[in-house]
Image 1: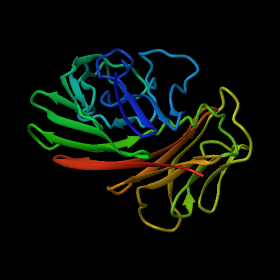
Image 2 (image 1 turned 45 degrees about the horizontal axis):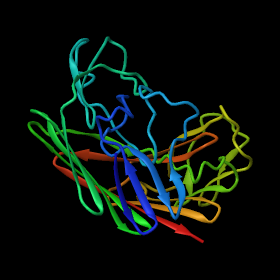
Image 3 (image 1 turned 180 degrees about the vertical axis):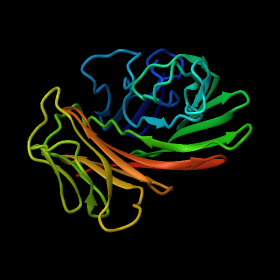
Image 4 (image 1 turned 120 degrees about the vertical axis):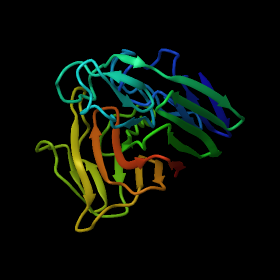
Length: 283
C-alpha cells in the first residue's frame, strides 16, 4: 500500500495488483484502504463482509467507467473497461456492471509516489494511456486528477465517483445530510419512509437498518438544465465538500446503513482531463 500524509490528513491507497480488489467494475487505480482526518477514519471498509471478487469491495472515492465496445463485441470477443483492462464478453446478455468478467488483457500499471501524491498509470497497449494522480493540497483537502489519451480512435463514455464515505462507521440516519447548490428533483426507486428530498438536498427521517437501502437514479436541478459538480456530504460536525471541474450529466444516490453515496456522472472523450477536489470541514 501507499500512504501520504499532510498534517492530520492521511490517505492510504492500495496498489492495483495487490489483490485487495479483484472485481471488474471499479477502476483499480487509486483504490482507497482508508482516509483519516484528525484521527477519525472518514473512509474505510463499509461492507458487512469482505470478498475481493465482489463488485463493490472498494472504499472511499471509487470510480467506475462505462464499458466501451461491449455492444459491438461478439460472445468471446473483448471490450474495454477503463482502469481494469480488456474484458471478455461471455454471451448475448446485456452488460452487467455487477458481473465478474474474465480479464483478457489487464494491461500494465506503473506507480510513482512523492511526498504528497501518488500517481497511477495504466497502459493498455494499442488502446490507451490513463493516469490518475491523487494528491494532498493541505491538511484538510485533496485532489483526484485524471488524464486519458487513446492510442487509436478516440474513446468516449461516462465516468462517476461512488463516494463511499463512512464518517467513522456512523450509522446512516438523520445526522447524515446531503446538500446541493440547487433544489433537487428526481424519482425514488420505491416509496421509502426513511428518506426524502429537501429544498437543498436529501434528508433521512430515521436510521437505516442493516440490509436496508435506498436509491434514486435521476437527481437533477428542478426546473433547470444541467447541474454544477458541487456536493456537500455531512455527518454531525463533519462535512465534505466535493467539487469537479467538468459538467455533471446526471447524479445517482444510493445509501445503506453504513454509507450515503452521491454519484455524480461526467462524460469523457479522449484526449481528456478532469479533476475532483475534496475539502473536509470540522465545526
